[in-house]
Image (cartoon, rainbow, N blue to C red; front, side):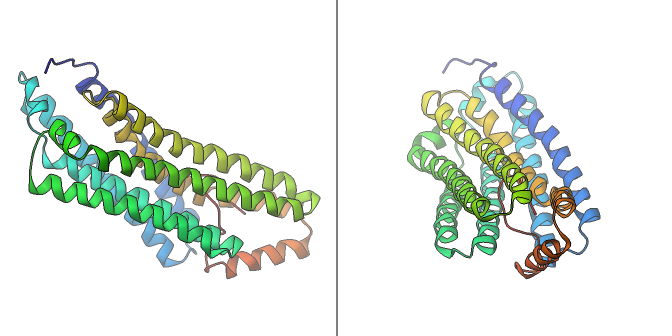
Length: 292
């Protein structure tokens, strides 16, 4: 195959650099979370720590892949079509694990908010399918080392299914959350409607961010499977999930202040009690848009 560095190694390098910038944002948000919310339940703190560790591991693996292709195999560009380091398939696994954590956590918060279990079960099932598919791809890549071209050709149907299910999960999560918030808005007092409107906008914005990135990977892979543009986008996606989760948690303080400033004391006390009852943690919501 002819080698074009711009849409192969160049695309991957741009994606990796952007992902490293976003990793810095993730670490900063993690620090803010632990300093701002020391009273959060332990299971929530463990989830944040686990996602942060997976992000660092993901960054190391994708960086190693780029190093092998650009430094170890320097002057041998044909090697990217003949060999892929195992760190690459490991990156795929960490990315799916991060997405599964976020896609599994957000429906749990929605259930704590709406008490409608069937919605969360559907989204959990979709997230599990994506995780299982990525695990199969990870194991296959470790057992039979090959080039990325051979791997994507052999498992094209599975790769497309993983990204399609991932994008569908993000869209379903966003749609479910917006629907719940709209219904809450119809019964909310006038003073709280502005806050609910802001939550709806945030939910749409952050939900569209992860959904659009998943769709972008799927389209790039389907239309341009012989270059690495889809890998450049893939390098960034896991950072979007992690930052969505952390932004959602860290924004609670601001929104609580807005809410309590505009509500009578009796309603503020009632909503505070509701927050405590909801799985002994912060209130439900989605995407980077959180919440009361």
